[in-house]
Every structure is written in C-alpha cells, then in structure tokens.
Image (tube, rainbow, N blue to C red; front, top):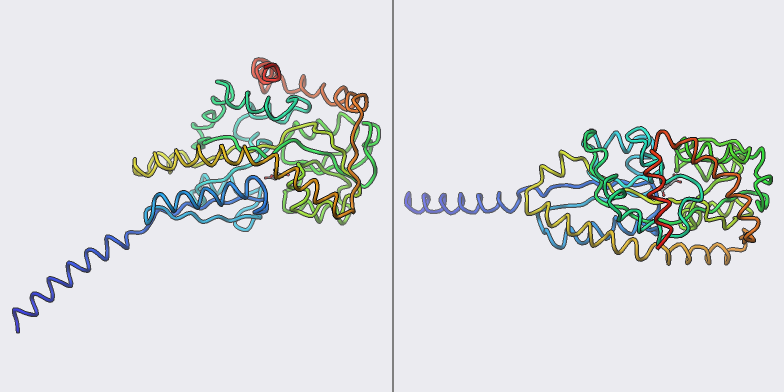
Length: 330
Ligand code: LMR
C-alpha cells in the first residue's frame, strides 16, 4: 500500500512537472493602436497576431487593442517605454519628441507617389531612421503604409485661399502645423480618437487623412467635401521596446523578425486597395463630394506649402530631405 502510494506520488509529481512545463506562461505581446480594424494598420496587427500564435504556439500570445482602447495617441509611446505595451505603430508624424529626423516624412508634397515612399523607406537613409531611437529604447521594426492624405472640410477646397481662416485638426507635428499656417489656416493638435467629435461640433472645420481613416472613423459623415490632394504621407513605424525585443529568447525573436517582414510586405501590398475601396464606400454613402484638382490647382497648393521644407531643413537635415526627394526619380 505504502509502495503504491509512493508510486502514485512519483506519478503525480511527474505529471505535475509536465503540467508546469505546459503551463509555462507564453510571452504576452500587447499591440495597441488607434485606428479601426479594417484599415492597413488594423489588418496588419491582426495578421501579426495570427502568424505569431500559429508559428510560436504556446510561446507567444499577442493581444491586439484597436481604436485607442488600451492607449490613445498621447499615452502609447510612454506605455511602450514603461513596458505596458510591447508593440505600437504610430504615424510617422508622432515621433518629433524622440527624433527630429523622422519629421522628413511630414513635409508636404515630398513624395510623388507610394512607389517613391517605398524607395526612400528601403534606402540606407530610410533604414537608418528605424535605428535612430535605440538610445531611447525604441527599435523600429519596419514601415507600414497607410497612404497619401486628402484634405477634408465642409466647404470645397480647390485652392489654398479656400482654406484661409479654417481650423484644421493636425496630428502632434510641428511640420503639419506649419503646413496649415502656410495656407493661412489655423492648425489644432488633437488626438485621433477626438477627431470625429471635433469635426461634428465644429471645434475644427477640416482635417487631413487617407481614405481608410476618413471612412473607418466616419469622418465623411461630418465633412461635405474631400479634396483629393495627395499632399502628404500618412505611414507608420512599427516599433517595439528595444530591451524587450533584445531580451526575447533567440528562437522566438528570429521567428518574430521573419513574421514582421512578412506582415510588413502584406500590409504594404494591400494598403492602396483598402484606401481605394474606402474611397468608393465614401462615394456610395453620397454624403461627401470628392473634388479632383486640376494640375494647375494642385500646383497652387504645392507652391503655398512647399516653403515649409526650408523651415525644417535645420532640424531634419538638408541631406536627408535631398535623399527623400531623390526617391522620386527612378
Ligand atoms: C491620425 O492621428 O490622424 C493618424 O495618425 C491615425 C493613424 O494611426 O492612422
């Protein structure tokens, strides 16, 4: 009897040990963002979770928090540094407190199209920017596209003078503030989660965003006109806490690195189609007129806004601006 009990005890201990090994907690990666799920970034976060959990079963668990549900604009960077969230993907307009160089992406009328954006992001200068904040414990894992921004308002904006005196919501970016000042409009910094209400209540009269954000936040319901200006870029840097990433077990990190490359390629392949689909959905809603600019009208916006480049040349660096501009040539 005593023998049996010992055997049973040994068995129970063995099972317990195995149970403990199985129950070894997976590494939890919280991925927080501010946009809706059906957007390039929203879809990218979902795909990252799917691939990470499929390929690292039991080792990694990814929790995705969309729509500022965990942290909004004002808090997510701080939360990343405190270890309260492990991956975020802020728009490139939201890094100016960490490095001035990334402001290059906000310069109006810098990139002719997304192919030029791709060339710059993949160039040595673009890749260096991913590493430019490591001294602050922030590692850039890749660039995710949303796309080019369109202006919106409740009056038709065909020429810069149409924007005069209007209040435009801007992201937390000094470049974007200057961009609107350049057309004698009034920029107001506001977090993304507040834009719909800001437009609805008239705290601001207009905004700038790619179609996917305008559609998914229902901004088109409170904006009668969208001008297809393609005047600037809204892309993201997928970032992590450097110490966290470097501290991951080597096998987990190398698999996650591969997954990041795969997801980045997929996001960047799908982003344009998503924006075009949302443009069509806005047209179908019949609440908003989409204005196409003539080349002459667009040139007026460019001439009015481009002097902003010079204002930031000192902070960003003339060479970096030149390198980005050079990506327009194939
Ligand atoms: C915005 O604040 O308008 C955007 O940066 C939101 C986003 O993440 O696309």
